Length: 124
Image (cartoon, rainbow, N blue to C red):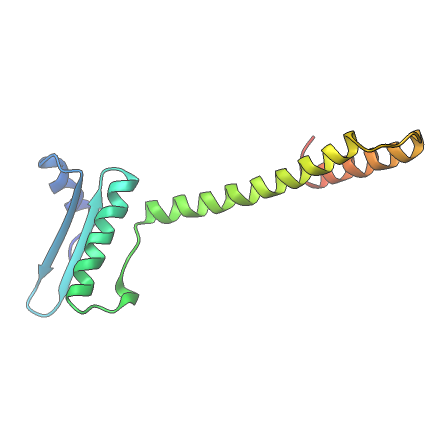
């Protein structure tokens, strides 16, 4: 990349811009750099940069996604996975609480099994 993101950021900040897309040509190759103040701005600028790349005939493999956006997407996937895991544990807990049993031994077995599950999941 001939245009450092740092330079795009500095230019945008100097001119009080929330997004910037820079297109350059050095006589041999085209270059595109984008920057956005927020994650939303960053994603929007990158989309604009990708549209310029498409217009100029660049292959989709050269389209980019900002690292800040990728990090948030990774975090979101992790949180969704954790949410699914916790929902399953909550369902198990609700079944234990509402289990119609008059046998204290049966309840104790279910309770102990649930405690083992919680420990396995790292929940105290």
